[in-house]
Image (cartoon, rainbow over the protein chains, first blue to last red):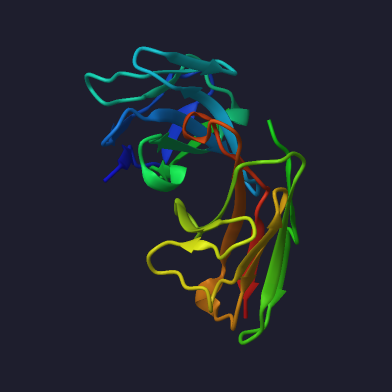
Length: 114
Length: 116
């Protein structure tokens, strides 16, 4: 079956530091990959996505590249801000799988200190 | 994109009672889903809400406990029945559109439920 594994948090950083959150996946087909962000007290918002190998998704200074050879979709940001403090979820959608459901990783809490 | 309105945003309920959560999408969508997110945890899919027919439940979730309706393409409800403190969670509604396998899901703000 499909699964997503992401690094456990919490990740604590200082403002302007470099952020990497690792995400690897297993899938039977050729999935689309997503990063979602959940700010405190809110629902999930799509941060970025990639639908095929070597695609790079980017938004708000965040980037992630779909690496089929390593089955990874690591999230990076070069200079984080306090406002980036949130929980980040990696997810996949396998168009070949029944139900078109999203499979989520466990989430990584990021805390950025001034 | 789609905007999802979910209500109530939070509630405190007595054990043994039931709560119905409503989800309204601002555009017609192909699929709607209900998730549970326990404190500090990831999302667990409860069921897929099917228009005009019974929902498709994931393992560990049953219709008697979590009855779901979807009378049209833009509206769904989830009821948490006969609640116990273990049902205290955030419940999230989600929707996906055409070309579902390749498109992102949109989420409501969630309903934060506390059972006392």
